[in-house]
Image (cartoon, rainbow, N blue to C red):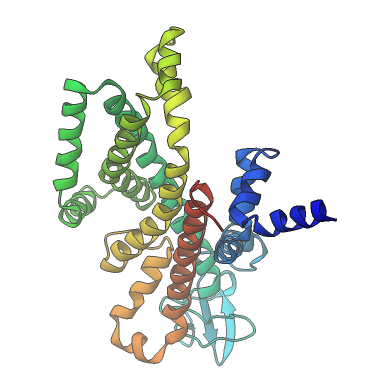
Length: 334
């Protein structure tokens, strides 16, 4: 009886952290990270938001009866489509700024296009820009940061001075100059999107490189790296098979939070007229309709929906990023 009471007392004194340590012995680190992530309610909410946005942006357009660039007309209160319009008929007018209806759930914009359809296509471009830019940042940041952290010395100094130069580049003036150059050269609108992604990626890799370099400086002197040197692994395998994987948790968090930041950046540039060019839709250039005071005051259904999409998507990425950061933190006790 006494022995049983001692066991009960010991069980009552086991903390949540102790139980997690016991579980760590029978599950993999990946499963432990997933378990911590799933317990974070905000992170789950963020995942639901992101999955919903991806479905709306990439699957939704397949179910839309309208095209991204389709313009609607009306004659005597009757809605007409482009394929049956007689442009010589002076009674036909473009259906601009039409209020929400059963045909157009979010109305039409100032050019007579279906706002909801363009909202879905705009989500595609905004999300793709975010992921591609972050991929470019990670590519250059991991390679240069890994080389600088591992070799140190002169190589480290050279790469870090390059990083300092990129940190000192004024972002907005450079983007405005490049945009003006592209307009002068009459570059096709679809190519401008690729140039925009490339410029944003090249100007943003320095922060990733500095983080990777700092992490590798602290890892390269540990016992497992001494072991890789003792068995004769070449530097490339030491960096990319042993050092970089140990930095991946931090990189995943940076990538998740970075996508949200890039979407905001693209939205800001498009709002200023230097982002995704017309007639391509993005959430940023759809919000730019508020530059017209009449639309700002009287046609809320034109600019509020893309603004809400930007807000919820960035919030979703932030929730997921915070959840991943907590899940990968070995000191978390929750």
